[in-house]
Length: 293
Image (cartoon, rainbow, N blue to C red; front, side, top):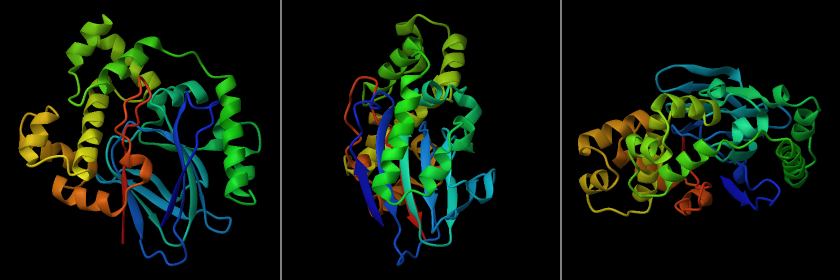
């Protein structure tokens, strides 16, 4: 697998966490990849010689996000549970991961409507951007077209929700996530009001988002070997006990922490390795994927 991260232009930095490209190569022997639960949304272009290479995106509980070939250019919303996506041949893919609030701002959608869903990018553009991206002469041209599309969306973006932005900052600022009650008290809003605004902007409830952030922080700690015992890691991250920690991991990843850390070490993008940086409202959520044969 050849993975590359790309510099995010200043024009889209307020909305884009990172941009990546991935090529499996003709020697690829994997049959699919698993995406863990996350508050991440974004856009992916994938193909193999002009046709879709990804098929049958299904959650671990059996919910079919897409049966058959996935669109070659699609927007995806936050995932509530792990998803397995199959591919039967080599592929090239380019993707953009949005900041938590960017899906609703750039595409002017109610983010919860895209939770656990993917939808063709043509839904959000009257131009021929889909065909242009798929038929681009190479990755450099494809990247330029993609960024131009996002720049156009950024110039016409919906207003920022300051309450949600402040809530995201509070949730991300500490190693041990804050409790929802602390966020509500700091923002001086009701739980119902914050939940409604989070669903519209981020696509998940504040309580769910706190759980997802804690899970992603645990992935980074596991991948970096920053713990002596699972019980210590569970305590540091605010889990009730080790049993709760393991149960949460199985729900979010479909794996135990011990199995997960092996798969994450086998394949983890460089942007994931440095995702622990804290930058006001712009922290990566650390979402990860593992390839399997």
